[in-house]
Amino acid sequence: MSTPVSHGSASSRRSPPRTEADPTRDLAFDILCGVVEHRRMLETTLDRSASSDPRDRASAHRLAATVLRYMGSMTELLQPLLRREPPAPVRCALLMGVAQLRHLGTPPHAAVGTIVSLLRRRGLTPFAGLANAVLRRVAREGDTLAEGLDQDRLDVPPWLWSAWGGRARAIASGMHREAPLDLTLRPGAEVPDGGVVMPNGSVRFPAGTRVTEIPGFEEGAFWVQDAAASMPARLLNAQPGWHVIDLCAAPGGKTAQLALAGAQVSAVERDAGRMRRMSENLERLRIAGVEEIVADALQWKPASPANAVLLDAPCSATGTLRRHPDVLWVKRPRDVTALAQGQDALIDAAANMLAPGGILLYAVCSLQDEEGAARVEAALTRGWELLPFAEDEFQGMPIARTREGYFRTHPGMWHDEGGMDGFFAARLRRKS
Ligand SMILES: C[S@@+](CC[C@H](N)C(=O)[O-])C[C@H]1O[C@@H](n2cnc3c(N)ncnc32)[C@H](O)[C@@H]1O
Image (cartoon, rainbow, N blue to C red; front, side, top):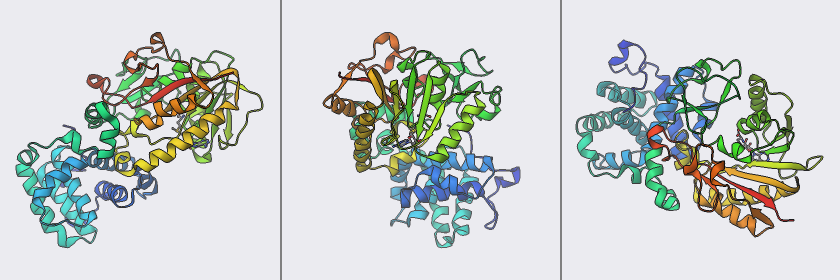
């Protein structure tokens, strides 16, 4: 069980009176209503929020993410306690209450009181009595009500469960845990105190660690990058002096790896705001000389062909659902189909950027075969050839190699060490 959501001062151990502000729950409620009613990504609501206190934002994010991680099983648990379907916002508030009681260790009086107050603040007073009764029952009988519920199965939408096949249960159990904080270190940088060096060289801190508080952050000794996300650039194995085009580059984690390996990097990113973030990141990391190009990769052409292209294509991002569990409830099968078409187009755009014999490293942070192996198989019919990764290229992550020579991870891997994101990568070459 995780630590309680912050309740502020000791006085807040009692239920707050109805007028008392509670920015954490207000923001978490807005996030959840955005996901459930409007299929709006969690980060979008956070970005639009007026709340500027980073602690409120972090607590709201944690509460909303916990609801989203357990939404299916908590909905099922509530079912016998509700005589009729409550309006969507009331359901969101009830789920927040259940998450506080069952997954965040919030004391029952606070878990119930904060939700009753929230409903009153949001003009939903007629449902305050219902929330009080239902949540008190969950506090008393939650374990009995949860008996026999298949949490892993219920917390994954059926279309994703079937798409994940034999991996589904392991992915679901990995997804139920908060992601640790992984860093990639500059070559030669010291391992910061408290960090655990993982077999692939990433340095791991417990979930909830603030990166800005780790010594060396301001000096640019490291950047945040999940262990699995650090692998595609390593697998490309760019040599000093290579010209490498990093397509879809922001916020620049892979650009930084390529530049520090000694490559001349042209980083292409369509979104000017995200490119600004990347520039700031590179500046903090003291990395100079990257050519930053704000352009659509489908249109842009390099002045001269490159030795390699790293394409970290836009995707459903189902691999990141430990940190972005909203993905579970916002994405639909048709989104994956549309993204797959875009991935094919980007793969073919890369063909015109490569020198003869040049390498394309295709990567997505997706768990969907439609965005991974199926895109490679389709590319093989359009003039690409596969260069399978060899076992000895997997630098501390041999578990990620598939029979076909792809790189493929999911959140259930390294389970006892804290898991990892889902990623797919393959190495391709244009047939001459
Ligand atoms: C998965 S993220 C890339 C993460 C990045 N490679 C890293 O390691 O930090 C995908 C990025 O692709 C950008 N993007 C999407 N479509 C694009 C296109 N047609 N041309 C250029 N950039 C694009 C998005 O704005 C987004 O920043």
